[in-house]
Length: 217
Figure (cartoon, rainbow, N blue to C red):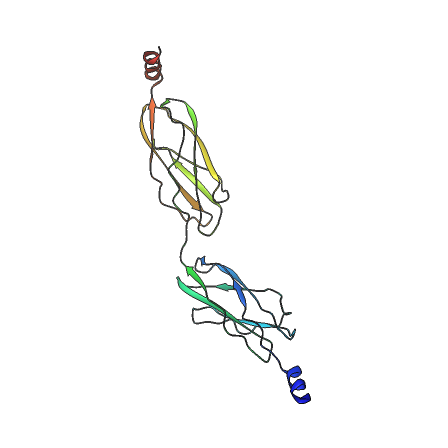
């Protein structure tokens, strides 16, 4: 009985299966970071190994304290869909592999903005009015927006956080019907497609005054 107690006291247990965090999408040659966290029942230090799912592995890391989050960077050279897993070791015993984090690697650019919005009324020549849209990026990167006014001119906004409201002012120098569009770009000069058009009606000053006079009671 005493021998069984002594053997149980000396028994070593493997660390827990790591909990792994990391991005689900990135571009080729971006450096992205993954973290792993494992606990050792015996309080031993832990090292980690990542299998990146692209035919390469990180090898075992230096030891870190049990329960401390471990971070490691990775660069995926090629586009594809990769399953990243991790295991931990206390130097004697290894844990099973973790669940996979699936990472899609491709050349991400901004999403297409919604069509711009502006005044609901018909505009007059030389009216300067505000138009707005929003834009998003799948990697959460800062973006700028270009407004194409449909009259052979355009305006770029400055860079701002994704999901911001992007605005620009414009005045038309001639009457007509114009199609206003917007597109986004990121800091690496990746462009979205153009948004759906917003139709803008612009009357001459005299034409609008005459229309307003005729509609007056």
